[in-house]
Image (cartoon, rainbow, N blue to C red; front, side):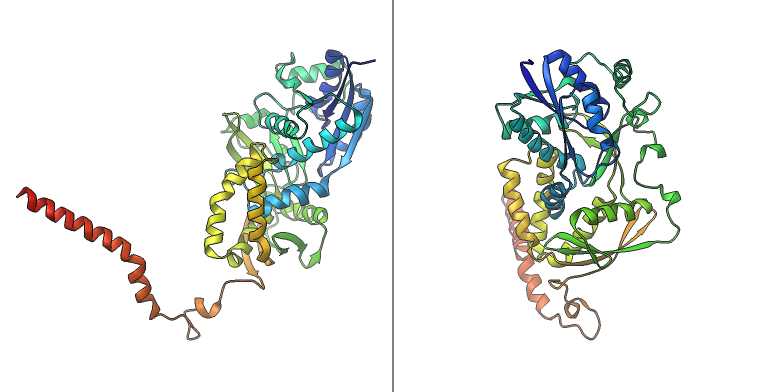
Length: 409
């Protein structure tokens, strides 16, 4: 009987497919795989059979999509969390949920180890291991990609072929694709050259702007307390809503991201993402906040959103600071209710309208017509008081300069 029992965070991709046999042989272990369905599609087909054929004794495939959206992605949406102001963090947000469920499976199976397929220079190794450590400090984390003999994806492909392990990656199509309902990350191959335009075959869910319709498509999104609840007048559950926006955005070339990203481990990395629904919702949500959040709240929220984003990206979802900021964010969303109309056209998102029962926009104060209710005479006194500190500073400085010149003379 094996001395060790290892639960593997199993995606069915190249790395984890190879890992099951490798761990079984190198750790004299019983292998159990766990796959969290966060809304990905392709890699789930035949996954349990593949895991068993690779040497796993048991395989868990759990649908976590609803929990992922409602407990991770939507809280981040309410915060406006976009890493380095560009990336809605589909991968970063999925890792804490996967780590939490990995621990739950390990507890259920009485495992003493867990393993992941993250690389030794990526962010995910930190996210998994810090989260597992926070939730189950007694479990041993194994990261085969940091220690095994394979030096390239090509060598892994050869190993898989030699051991009859079916994998989708080939030497001619070496992309590493990490997909969930909130977005897709595409890495490796020609994408490692920051001067190379991503080939069309790298993208999984969006058409190119050149192939998008020649007519714009309008979409109306309704929010309640910062959470999207309907599209084009149709109320939807969280999963259906995001799927619908992925389709709408995808066919209009919306959601492609190509960025040089600062990784947690200290290197810059060229990253290509697709996130049609995420980008659409972030744009709509931000516009709704513009008319519902009071000025000082909106400005203060903008100050802390990057810190919140960094916490998620850096694997600190289960941290006291993230939870504290989330409490502030949730408070700000109490009146972020209303509707936003967007025009999608060949990769562009254009705001076409917004309304809210809690809108702080008052047409009678904003207008320049005869309906204007703003008291223009009040501005003179306001400007005098508002500018008084700066007039005082300069008056004092001028007086000091004059006295200095007089002293020298």
